[in-house]
Image (cartoon, rainbow, N blue to C red; front, side, top):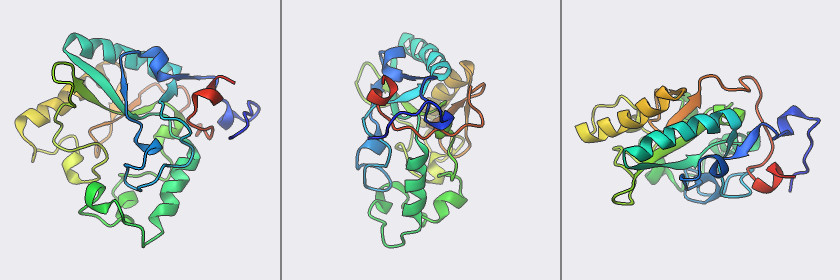
Length: 219
């Protein structure tokens, strides 16, 4: 357990909130707390399966949630704030050539060293600044994820938001999510349909190191 140190800006969570407190209707499946991710292990720094986000980003996401619920959808969160130690875990994994357990599921067409070169994994992640979220839509009628044409964290060209090899319906589903996020102040990236960062993020130059933990947040 990491001891809280508010004298170190990177360890100070005072600008963060537990996302479920701000956006009560979200569904959470925090993949990096589980072993079902592109590495195959729980990722360092994920002490609880919860989403943390800056207060500003959480407020903006509430507006997205309200808008989507009127249309029959809930937001499903895969990742939000990601501590620096988690990114270091990714980097160390990338140089261990023998560990490719999850390749068939998450990066079938690439070698893992290419994941950084292609922009799928960053050596300094916007997630560590606390205003980036990975998410999809959940259909309230069926209880299932909306079909986006590729699953979360499939590190492939198929997951590019503008990829036209998916069906028209899958492409439109991606655009539905993207339009709602952009209307409420979030910016997309060009290689992952699920990834959005608050345009006016409060900590554009600060990469946080405290753990993903509701207990740490409330100390």
